Length: 114
Image (cartoon, rainbow, N blue to C red; front, side):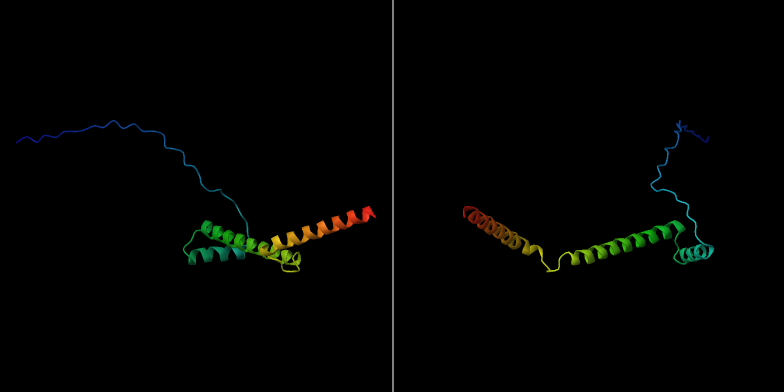
């Protein structure tokens, strides 16, 4: 019995690999040695890379900063609304101011006739 071996040849066209588009930016940061050791220790304990740790640190900082700015804005807004008006009060207040303005205008017209 004769063994028959067929060899199949494929023509493989090798294309240049597609360039990888980086979806993140690289930053170089510096920190005191004690802080760097603490960061590396924390990253190891949490099984994270330093990049993951720094991203999370920035997210927490950003969240805290937004919260601080909102608190400051609320404190400022409270000083600008000493009567505690709400959005529901606006139509009534507008009507009151317009009525006062009409009354002043009519009073001025009466004075002008005298």
